[in-house]
Length: 363
Image (tube, rainbow, N blue to C red):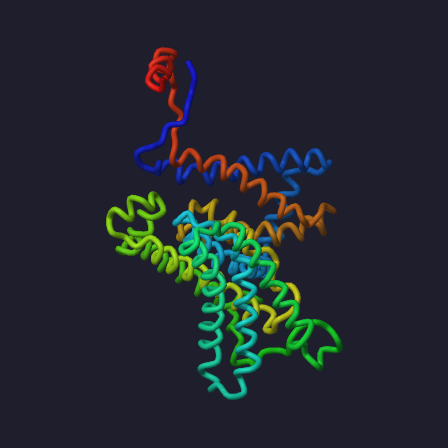
């Protein structure tokens, strides 16, 4: 008797709920074992992280500051992943959108009417993110170039462009030699909700609801699901695979771009060092833990934001490296990837007779 994986006829709804929960529990156990190996008390460490991330109003707002870009980039990569388009370029799309938004805020503000400055900044930033994602999408649909490597490499190109600008031509002449542009005019600032948390939170929640509706209640969403399951079947049904991939990836880049706009217009209010903090890469974990479900992504993003903020608290209170939060993120990803197998496959028991019959059939 042996065991084998068998493709499910329908995706397991039980597994969709259970896998993220079990993955999170497994990641806590693995992290606890690692903490014990370092001589730290796991329960005290987790308590310190929770208090640092959610234990006060200020802690909560700082968690939201981290969660907002994770929500938007998580939504962006989740949409692309639905089509089996592996968009690893959210970091670059976020960064280039921040550059474009800064360009509008600094150089368009003298002549653009004040009420139009912020909407224009948002549109141009989202367009920059969409165009940066559109490059690998065109290469994929026209030349069959693998998008994983292209999106990854474009991250570094975008980061180098931003560094060149805030260290060079765009550097604030009154900044005493420090890198960064001049401050944006107030008309280009995102209004803040509490602390440093800004209206990007509302935009992210609206985007999550709209994306869920599009994917589950519209014809286009149905076409995207068919393409993700089988591009060949989609073509047999008369669905334009290339056009839909291009449109979806452009929207993916726009969502990631909106995260970059929020970082420069809502947090720093200028273009400076530290725009790319790895949100685009963490978004991949967020999307997978949420099972690519737009409604679940905001909640997972808040959890991840809490890990980032709580990691700093662990450093101060427990004397552990602040990278402990990042380590926990990685430990969540591996159980998540392993567990996601069970949403589409189930374990089937194979008897000796069945194995022999299968072997004869293969022969």
